[in-house]
Image (cartoon, rainbow, N blue to C red; front, side, top):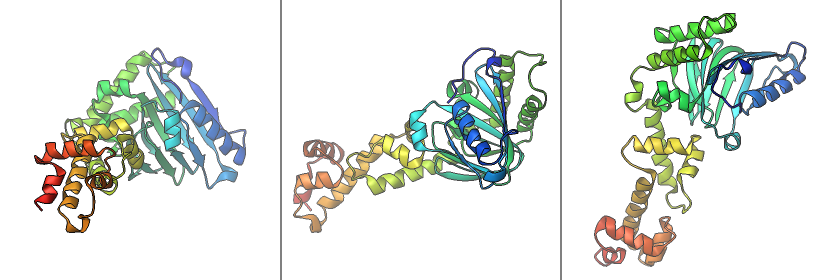
Amino acid sequence: MTALIAGNGAERDKQWSSRNLVGNPALSAWNTVMSDCVAEMNIDSAERSTFSARWDRYGLGPIDINNFRTAEQTISRTAAMVRRHPDEVYALSYMQQGSAAVRHAGIDVHVPQGSFILVNHASPYSFRFPEGAVALTAHMPASWLRRWVPQPETMLVKTFDADAWGGALAAMLSAIDQKGLRDAALSRSCIADQLGAFLALMNGNVSAGESLHQGKLFKRALTLMKDRFDEPDLSPHALAAELNISKRYVHKIFAGHNTTFGAELLALRLNHAKDILQDARFAAYRISDVAYACGFTDPSHFARKFRERFGHAPLALRNHS
């Protein structure tokens, strides 16, 4: 992924077009330039024989504006790509023309023409543009974006209409697309700050509470943990891979519910152990068997945590059942 750096940004200005390419070579070249200059991704199209695309990039201080004009295509960024390039960069796309079907963090959303959507390159995603598209996209490092939106995670996989402050942001992106920045009266860093301010106004106060996206992810996380709590190697990293989000975001959604991954996992394991100890069908299980069946690798650690939670040893509970 291209590093976003501070400064004027003009040195990152770039244009690319498939105008002199035909068919599969155009699609192949498009794959290469996008992965080399924007973010590693796979791009395919049902219109391989007639595929065409154009890309214009403008550096705005610490952020980039990437404007894409493409024929029908599907973009995917896989978990393996994220592991190779884990930089936390957010991409805000305004669908000036065409629509998109987006899948990100395990959630599907339709983005109609005239709307915005935010994704995070630190998690896998896919975009499908069924009729081609003109997508005006701001790529923003997380450290910069959080100056304006303290919790950008609350904006993920949600559509924002280009009305009110969204309309002002859409007009700004469209003006950059149409006129470029050569004769702009303000510095590029100042223009970037204007973009951040519009984004903060568009977001409003949504960051003050839990988003629908976070709520759904928390429920999915708990469901997955209930299905897999007996796996000794279940971890925030493993859960993040299942949910197609970053490990950091896993911790974020649990913190939003005043708990932690470790606390929820321990509760699931100990409660299941209690059920086993009180079930006559498992009378032949030794205490170590109960521990292993619940995901503990150390029976003494299990016994200690069980006593802390229930006030007595596992064997004592069995003897009184």
